[in-house]
Length: 322
Image (tube, rainbow, N blue to C red):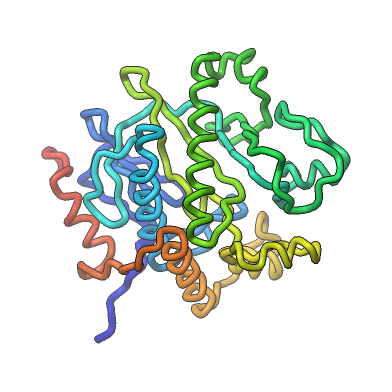
């Protein structure tokens, strides 16, 4: 039997209150300080939506769930319930205005990455001083935090140092000390567990928020294929010695395909071939299994993913919507 449409390209549910539709998540604020976060299957790059990848949202939700459960002893998180394989009910938090990126390797491809800046001759960045003589994709002497400002208004994130964060009153010194300690502990746990799975956790981003009592909680997602860079340990040394990029989960095949065919920041996006969508879906599912050590079980319940999500979220529907 043919399975009906298994892509959750949106979760616009009018019976839920206070919607906020992001690039890949559709969210609703409940009146009791809880938030519904629905991970769609949309894939974003170049500041726009390229398409939808079957089961991507489920992979990200359940990968984050795995890590939230395995790091709760380090830091409390925002999760209250999982009513659906694509949905988190979380505490509504005031997101702190600093994005925390932890890096264990001299890696990256963007103009602001530490590898790009290092190759231009910079040695001091984000409040750290890196030694001379490091090679592309080499392990850093110790993991470092490279914080940036969070651009809530659509602007660009700006690099920060610890001194900048405190001087600009983005965080208090107590908050910064707490968050940086937690972030490094989370990263160490992630690297250790990844190594046990034959993976290298290269770098990752964390998002923190404060609840109504002022407690700092881990929010968003943690150690997912979208928030983190993982390399395959088997093959790293050979690639490093050859000066090549280490093998990883190749999620960028769609991004590269689009970039080769148009200016993705200006031109219409060409239709992405079905086989490329399917290949990317397989990469996400394989990443889930490699990262967690668990078998991925696609949720095919419900007539469609949206119908399933609606049914599972019905207890949260507001009473005054017809």
